[in-house]
Amino acid sequence: MHWFADLIDRFYDAHWQVATGQSISYREIVGNAFGLASALFGLRRSVWAWPVGIVGNLLLFTVFVGQAAGAEGATTPLYGQASRQVFFVLTSVYGWWRWKRNRSSGGGPAVHPRWASGGERLALLAGSAVAVVACFYVFRAVGAGFPVPWWYYLADSWIFVGSIAATYAMARGFVDFWLCWIAVDLVGVPELLHFRYYPSAVLYAVYAGFVLWGFAVWLRISRRERPQRRSAAPTLEPA
Image (cartoon, rainbow, N blue to C red; front, side, top):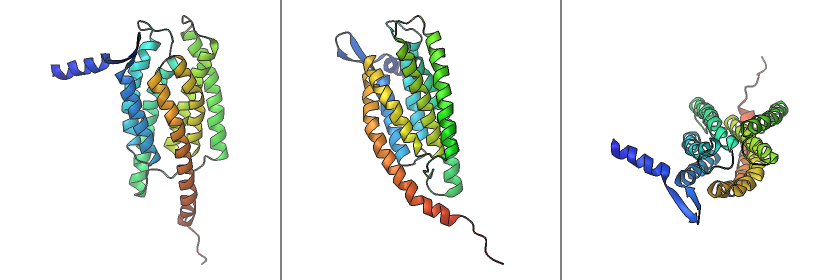
């Protein structure tokens, strides 16, 4: 098995030299490719969205954790980017279980898209707001030794919390999850470009257009399947 270990080591260290003094890890490129594939499976309501996404999360974790841990040459503590990969895996395990259960019990698609109820949406927004503030202070305290402006920690907190909220909403089948991703992309693309994580920035930009398409598709499905769900509801027959 030495050949396999050697292959893994080479892949871990492999970089694409894009300019003088600047390179991109293959792990970042491949991890983002898995992320886009996961989104495509999610659009099609396939259970494969979750295991494929987990592989991408694990690869991207290895990219960002070195920066967050202060690896050689690191100038930006990407705690939010690294930490959210861990929570992506945890949330994805929940989504995988939920979608598999839905498909096994109903025999149809893994999820039936619907808008979150008023109470569900309020709980998601309130919980996210509190979490953003809490993460801001935590990330800023942990990364006090890095020369970055205060807004970086707020942006990273927004991306971290918004990504988790979106993944949870996707697991529940909320159409709202596409809107969560739009909010994440609006902050994530400028941040990643600023810190030269170009493959991730490009993925976010491509994903923004894909998200708009996915939102339209899920919205159409939710409208089409809503009458079917209502007609399937049990009715009381007169005695």
